[in-house]
Length: 169
Ligand SMILES: CC(C)(COP(=O)(O)OP(=O)(O)OC[C@H]1O[C@@H](n2cnc3c(N)ncnc32)[C@H](O)[C@@H]1OP(=O)(O)O)[C@@H](O)C(=O)NCCC(=O)NCCS
Image (tube, rainbow, N blue to C red; front, side, top):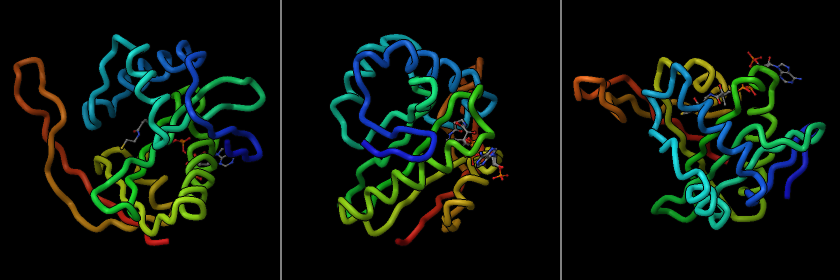
């Protein structure tokens, strides 16, 4: 478990189910949801079990409320020294610096304890909070592409511009 001034960054527990469901429902109702990999909005218990058993996924818990307000993930890649960073904070707790605080501690842990040499990440160019966070964390844009994760109500792909970022450690 990692601890910062305001946060615990720790593995998920079964008792996180209520907070986890609120977090994913909130994420999927965000205006940026069509530009992100879609999450199922049912079977939260089954999804949570997968995250509990995967050490890449960590809950972000607000110490003062003992409440899970987000997650950070360092997904494995084909190269065991490279991880792909992802983050989400519930909208009620955004703009308080929690994503930056959690991501810094989380990446430091993987660098020091797991020998990670590089992080990658990706986001839609229109997702300004995510782009700002990656820049603040020291990531550099290395590739731009057009992509799609979801279809509109007519079944047509929602395409958008996205960028791949990297941070060498
Ligand atoms: C992307 C996301 C994680 C950013 O979360 P966030 O909590 O707003 O980001 P930060 O931690 O960088 O905090 C943002 C602001 O909080 C402000 N802040 C307020 N109080 C603060 C404090 N005590 N300490 C530090 N910063 C504070 C900062 O000024 C910062 O703004 P700045 O960088 O312009 O100075 C969030 O918008 C999110 O979850 N979005 C939905 C999911 C998503 O899009 N994920 C990425 C998919 S690719």
